[in-house]
Image (cartoon, rainbow, N blue to C red; front, side, top):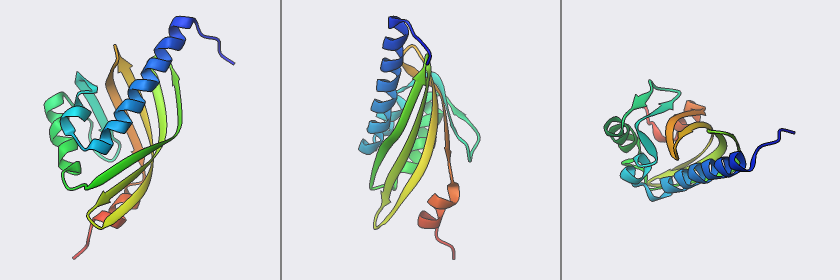
Length: 136
């Protein structure tokens, strides 16, 4: 088992708390609050898309896919951290009107001075699209 200094343990707890707070913020569906967790040049790499960087681009990207959500709750199943890296396994429960999906996800977060500098999110896109994307 790895041994950490007291300062490293405090930093890890703080980074985990920041990520937990970020995950909880999604339930309020407030794009400005969500983007506020990122560094000004922070990057969100939703692995199904190209990385998106900077507050303005993050606001457009995140706002674009949550605008029609009526509710979301993200349950943290497991969370681990070391230094400035936090990994969170989640179950994202999202509603869009009468439709809902429970989406297993895993996010890898890199933090810089208490802000998310990089977030890579992994999930199975067909699990999401089977519910929310209709074919004609």
